[in-house]
Length: 378
Image (tube, rainbow, N blue to C red; front, side, top):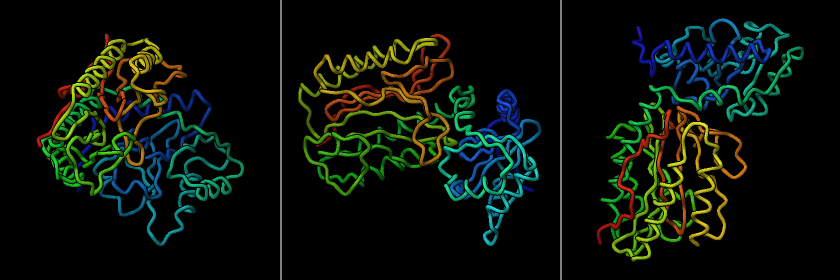
């Protein structure tokens, strides 16, 4: 008998299911084929590290969901999924044929079916096989249905993100303590990962990490490069707890920093403080976004500013690094209570960022690490 280890109370999952089903009925759909791993876990609780195999949830407009997955995942179904119905395939099966059979058994051949067609696990061959086997069914792309609901986090979800933020802080302290002339990026990464795991992170990270020339370019990863005096280390620690994410950036100079460096860091903090101060329910995303852009450009720190300034984070399973809500000059959405964002500013190789939750009156900063330029030992 497997002892359940649900991430949330069963009532929270049932409330999520109720919301999804109400929206399916409103859209005139009989069911949703949920292929996105985050949707499967968010609605049903089911989680396995093997989510990259062919698995999905059949979510009817009425009744309980069915989980479709590989048979070796049965233990994790019993441990994490609050709904019992399942169809499992083994490695000798035609898994697409088994999937089609499961869909027909629960929907018939003429149902109106929503499909998460934007899900990375639903490749073209699988989609064509399912569509061809159900020529009388009516399919609609519903890739936006559940991700839109996930943007507003429950208190229990944000509690996991607070724990992830604590792990991020442990990782950043390890980065500062380890950076030194003669140390390799790989050695730094090992210490960061160990610190975050010990502090509760489910995955090691470390996240964005690069030095030297690569520090001026986003999304660098660690290498065998040896740190030199005066290097910038661009570091963003990205841990998660129950795969709920929090993250932040801080700039590090190796062994020495100039007065200009200190002024740059102080300017970025000031710009970020002004932007975050404008975040509260009902405020358009373009308001703090413009503060970032105008502040950086008017200070002469960049010639162009094309990247987003906020993006939503929550339950994220690799390869996803963010939720589909971003702040940029063309954004049309406004902040709402329960949203959680990574918000960042970049200039001249320095990155300063925080993870924040939107409250009823403003924001709560989930990452609470000193906000400054750090200078490592020599």
